[in-house]
Image 1 (cartoon, rainbow, N blue to C red):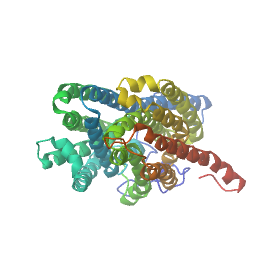
Image 2: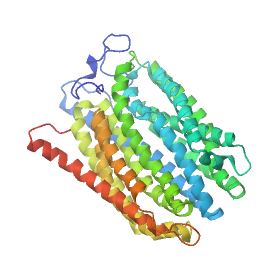
Image 3: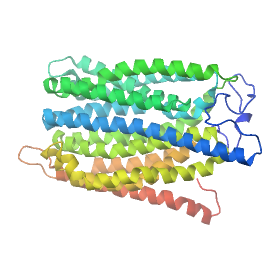
Length: 477
């Protein structure tokens, strides 16, 4: 594992702990391993350790992917239920509320979830302190940004408040959701980093079931507000429960160690600064795109686009979370970085490319389940999924750059790919409106094409950059 300001080949043993003394071991003694440590210099031991490390990487990656995919699939199911029990316009307004608090949570948590994957494995007896300090940063940040967002966009708060409720109540629900979701990734990644990856998966599965149950109970009677409450209530409850769970397990992890380490302020800033900018690119891509579409094209076509976009994000989120495991893997086995990177490249396409192809084939059938108004976006969905194929190249490269602590390069790639899409959504002509003043769903096709083209251009750049660097005699970025 390397510090953000160190060369990738610098051994962990040269780093200083918080007290200024060099740690006596390279990693905490309780670093999760599936086999005994081999004798130094033993070829058989090295092979055994590499095999065990690879299995751990696959387990961590699958656990993170399943956690992300469960959330995304549960989201699709909940929107399916909403689409069947309430008008498409109400669904459109609710999507704006949900996308907005997801955006605020992603922006204000400062990429500390990814930081947990890098820092937690070597924190040793300071693991619990690292866990709780992340909360002390995220909670006020999400609350402040959420309140500002609501003051700038009070119409979104009105959806949460309901037709007769107080605007302040809607703002309160929004802030609670933003704070809880801001902590969600920190809890998931902390559990993975200390060797408890499947706790995160089960937590997400139970949360999804509870959220869908609440939507069934509340959606028909409360409309868009019922969708909001089906998110906010379980977020609040599960955030408290997972904070307790994470606190207990990080404390147990730390109690087994003989040394402790926490990043200094300068070390934290050097990692979080550029990667937070990149993370903002991610959350803008995932969430703000749909908010802009609802505002520019209207709630009815916006709702159809949101469902198509969510289907694409099921794959995108799962792929990016799968690549998050590479950070922890290189922390455990930095000498095997090249092999782990190559293996992750193969795995991401083997796992996710079939999902994309199935989605393209079943686009009509899948959207028809939501209703005829949503099925009109089937061509839009197909084009978005085609754009997901080069997006897998980008997702892999992002995971590699983050795991290798190349924060600036990570941020640059993510922001470029995101800004292309945002520009398309902001400036693509909306087309004519019908007699009711609504845009046609077909008017969203240029947006989908713009997404696919922008991701293809970025993927070509990713693949061509190492070749250009070699031709110039310079190391690849």
